Image (cartoon, rainbow, N blue to C red; front, side, top):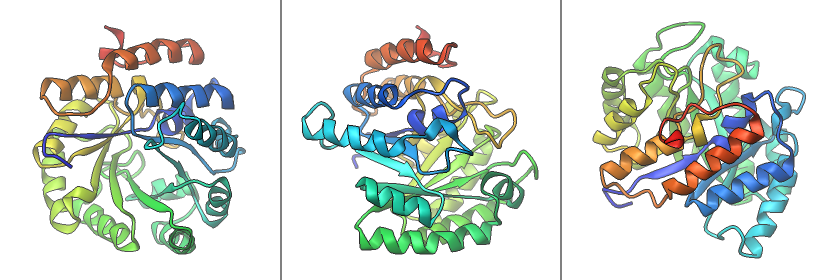
Length: 301
């Protein structure tokens, strides 16, 4: 990756929609993915193989993959667009394999309490679950991305030790994931924390394999992204319009808005290959679909 280029990983279809009251059908989500690809997004997380009982918004992920894969074959969606899904365990991984997906994501927490609330197991138990998932991924030549949540603070435990975050990032990297996304799940991070944590992280995990995942609960996400960028991080997770939030993180708002991040990097002359005008059009379209305004600032201008 060039020094002045930035990779944006679009979270809106999965992390964004999973906390919305309005549940979008498969065809609407496929159209969302298509529009995002047309705007220049190259990496899009399109769903998750979790039980619809727990996350009804993600029902139909296999159908979404089937339809988007067909759209790639016909050229409607570019063949170079990388689509991934979240998997919680071996069962979810087997469903993902059947869908023909080329990339999956696994997730763990830096907080024991949040881990139990979110995925009903301890941190160590979550890593044990990754074992068979990683074996299957290697067998079927599927790329694996790793998420670490609550890296800067937890809604239940408060402050999280930076040493613990670094240790868990190393542990995840050693599993064989190609990238570790460092998550500010409740949007509590500030620039000072970002600087100290990412300085430690890049000594433990290759910088090219570290991504930043910031929520904007306290309005600090852009500043935090800029701080991480100044330290050399070049991959960031964003969500169209600022969609989202976490069902198990009370009060947390959505991921930082894709439009706001692209606007900032345009100003820095950092290449994202994303069309801001098209993102704004998607923002208006999505606002009508979910029946409420989105928090993005640049998306409203």
